[in-house]
Length: 322
Image 1 (tube, rainbow, N blue to C red):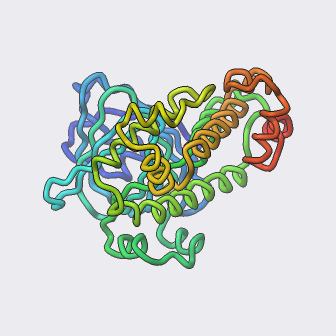
Image 2 (tube, rainbow, N blue to C red):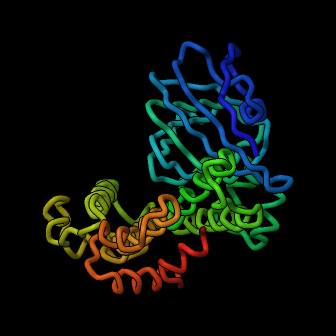
Image 3 (spheres, rainbow, N blue to C red):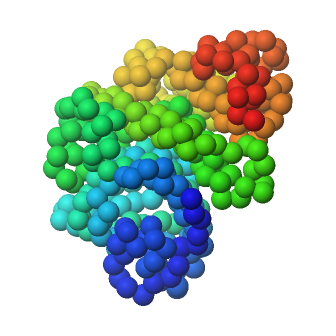
């Protein structure tokens, strides 16, 4: 496990292997303060946490000489990336979104501005084949092409998994602050497999939905989702979401099932419980404090909802992660 600042470079192109090895990162005039946390769990498998503050928009010219399949979740900030020869097509990875990429020997650009943090599970094609031997369909075809940059449905569980991986790598980097709250490589491996499986499932969920909704309706549904999750202590009414987005109640209900694979309040409750799990794990807050902050007046109701979501009570979850 290592953590080191990303150093400056004068070369216009950065290879991924040098980026990982702390070399040739960016020009000194960018005003960027960036770091990389890395945990190598086995041959062909790394967890990477990228963190940075870009005081001005920064673009890196990259060459992928690493040949890994990357499953990423953006926890803070947005980024843009494009591949050379892709006719100027730009991929935008927004905060809270997920991405699967595989670009062996490809060149491209990656752009950042402001604060940024992402978690990536990076593995070799051979290791993915052993983890998911029955992978077929659209994703396998894109991987076979050797040129894959695609979004995946990043649900609450995937974001929560990325958060706990980020926290775990920080604990490994600062053991004096983490105390006994450190995790073995086997635990990190398990969480990595969870994130990869959720990303693969998220890609499968997202593919058939792209053509089923108009762009305007998709944007309205995404707006409705933002409104729904703005305050996890209290859900807005469906009528309010309908007024704010201009979608009928029926279209909202159908659209959530279609785009997010969940009901409106089902999605709210899932996000609420994953936020509860994140707070219990990362902050160590008492169960009753987390319950109250998330709108529960009755601790037993909170405990029942948490157990329904994760199969364990919040108190037991805290004990397991101490």
